[in-house]
Amino acid sequence: MDCLFCSIIKGEIPSTKVYEDESVYAFKDINPMAPVHVLIIPKVHLSSINDVTVENSAVIAHIYEVAAKLAKELGIDESGYRVVSNCGADAGQTVFHLHFHLLGGKKLNVEMC
Ligand code: 5GP
Ligand code: ZN
Figure 1 (tube, helix red, strand yellow):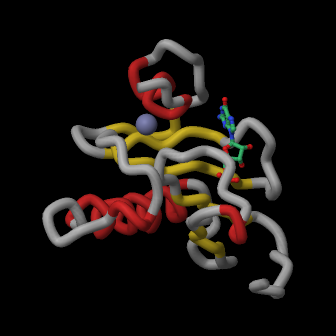
Figure 2 (tube, protein in one colour; figure 1 turned 30 degrees about the horizontal axis):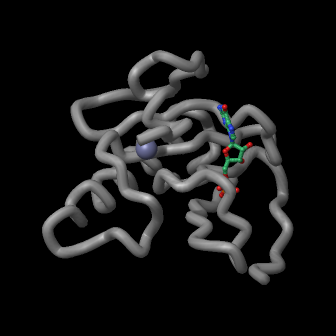
């Protein structure tokens, strides 16, 4: 299977790593929309939130733990931040390996849709 983010996890495509453990990888977005824009992804290939089940959902809770830890490390835990996952065409998902955008470091647009 050809997947951009699986290739990034394997190191076949370079990325600026921010965090890694046995189940999660986090790296800087190539086209940052905010001063802090990190992508947090599960190492297991899930295409989107649509693939989350009771069998694999533990990694999602872990991703939120990592988001909180990185927000603190990157100095945006007090100022505020957003964690977003786009699912499917209407949400504008462009990479079909589940990922969570961690965005902060400026006053974010308040519009949710
Ligand atoms: P989506 O639109 O699917 O929610 O988000 C995909 C994100 O992946 C975009 O913010 C885009 O800038 C980022 N992205 C796409 N290709 C690459 C890449 O090769 N490297 C990195 N670091 N980010 C990428
Ligand atoms: Zn993948």
